Image 1: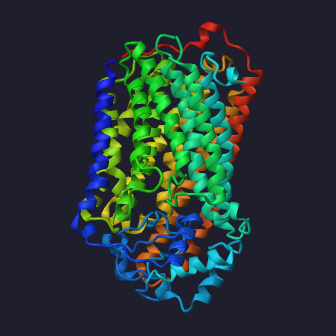
Image 2: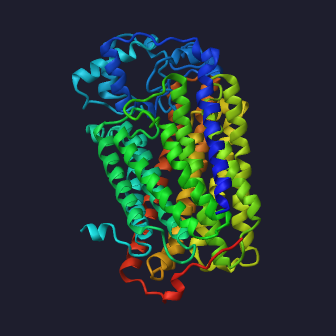
Image 3: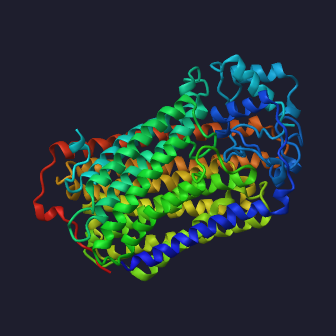
Length: 151
Length: 463
């Protein structure tokens, strides 16, 4: 079968492309500079709740270079510093997100006045965010604990 | 029961994949409509964990890619591949086993993603048992397709493109999902983000695109009764697709937290990806030159053409959003949703077009209603015409408000709300279009006029 040879060539190209753009960046000094931060068990469970409930469908956790200067959620420049590759070290799964229907949460803890306010927001929703009243207290507390680690 | 499930009846696997695709199209359309309804009315069905927004989005993405698009494209591809020497597939029972594994994985995915069992990644989130079922099914399909093609001396780029698609899917699943260590995610940090993006791009450009290209190139040439256009060039386009598609992954992080050189590679690859896509589109259009009556007579051909045009246009919109300047206002916004609606909607049109064109060759019956098929076509075009500009404009409105640095985020979200209502109307249109498609297909299977045995064969296409 004559086509088999160029199909094989295309497959090799695919694997090489994956190595170049997914694996090779792991060796970049900017990526290697970071070390996984310690996360308390409750916050770690809250991170899992964040992933399980699909918060990443609407919220990003990446302040792009263009936004670090002038991004805004409530007050000017409150989006926080530009995200760096090292900040994500050890995060599994990475929750950068690809659509921002709700505000970026990279530094959400610095914008929140109290845990109660956050708990209330998650329970009843606000603006375009749906309520999450179905979440058990344990999950809600853990989610709040996780979000409060995002400074 | 087992004899029925693993029958060796010719084209049984292709037929069942088409039926499954038509059913999943309805489910995927319903999930999509619910997702956009919740974006307009955030409180809708929010009291139930199974219908919470985040879980619905994950399930909808899974259903569109693996349930709807994949089932239809695989069904069409198996029929085209099996054409070889008119002997059918190398093994129908094995192809049927792949069908049952694939369908079981899809049922489990809908169930588990709704129940909140997920890998937690934003795209392709299904947990590892589902991934392994899909991998097993993909390997079986690859084996059957490869052995089928080995029987003949097939050299058409269309068949090569199909073989590449079937070979690429296991690679995409193993590398993108880290299935070489399935029980836990082997990636972390930025590398995991890039692997997620590779998975998303891979399922689009290394799975749907080669299958969509192979099916469309073959069927259009068969309907027009002409040899395929520039086989060497189209073959080179498929190789270029394989080389460029994995490099596109970092384009999702322009201005983002990945090294700048990786962003550059991604943005350049996203732009270069247009070359193979336009080449395939040309390969579909050229055999029709002077035979445009085929488009009027066969709605399936119109779907194939319009579908690839949408795919190429959507890819161009994604490429634009990857450039440093435009990405400031387009990236992470609804602009990219609009572009992806064109790409996935384009592949949906290709899949539906292939199903319509293959009806006599797979079901052995003539399509019951061409009028219904044309209605399906115009509803789809209407949805694109309405929803895509709305999403692109919404994205620009979002990006522009972020860029000012003086407008609160909530105001930008409010500016996008009317456009999302338009997209919800589009989602209802899509659901209706899928209903027309499924109704027409099942009505044909039930009461379509049988076609003579000679007309059940596809016209062989030789390069």
